[in-house]
Image (cartoon, rainbow, N blue to C red; front, side, top):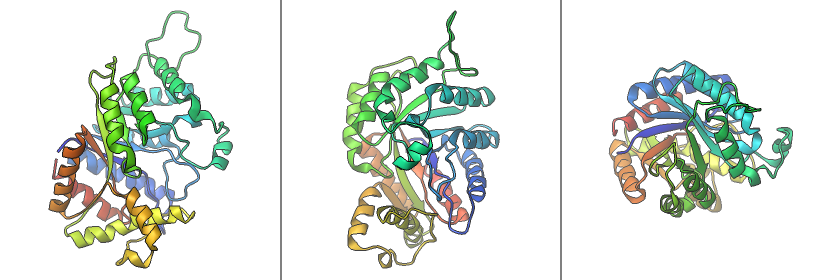
Length: 325
């Protein structure tokens, strides 16, 4: 089994508040550190009542401040929403406070709807300049040159590790061209996983940051003592994706005994396709599924999402998974 990491979306369960979700995220990170997970990432989403990590760099600081050794980072920062210099300053600050523990994953999508993009005061065409924005951001982390007119303070010379995130061939091509590690969002967009990995590996050019390609895949894991209990936990995620198709995203809902009472056949097909990189079951069931996935994809690391309603059940799922490392 390759190294395991966590992508925490700071899910807000029904009946809870964003504060509850953030406190649970810190508790999960502290457990994950003891269990041997490599990194703990948070993602930028806006105008979503079920996700509490919109101010991603602030939450990263909260998590890093409450842990000691685990790497903490963004999976990711949606760069079209920000000026590259602002992100350089934020992550330069994080790296200064928690040296050697900060990752900066960058995404090309806005992470929200078009109305919210306008509320963020950014252009809806920001994704068009993503490659140029990435290289500009990289430059802010390089050693400051004599007479350099604009610099990130802190930031210059810190060389915070940058990752490219993606769910299509575009991100794979960019990560390969820049010689950066690549994380594919197969936990919700598995369709292009294999061609993206192939594109990335075949086109990879070594860089100062990375000598050889390094690919990570996102997966959903719902582990419990029995297959039946794990399948029940999984129904929260299945409801979540069904609600997205219905145009009614909301807080994470409690699990159901029978998910077929919730969705119709078309919704089932759509949600199941998006969640096809999900491993649900007992310790042995999850082990067999993940082993086959790693053998098929050859990924260097897995980053795990677990949209589990009850915090104690989520902790137990990650604990069971950690025993496979």
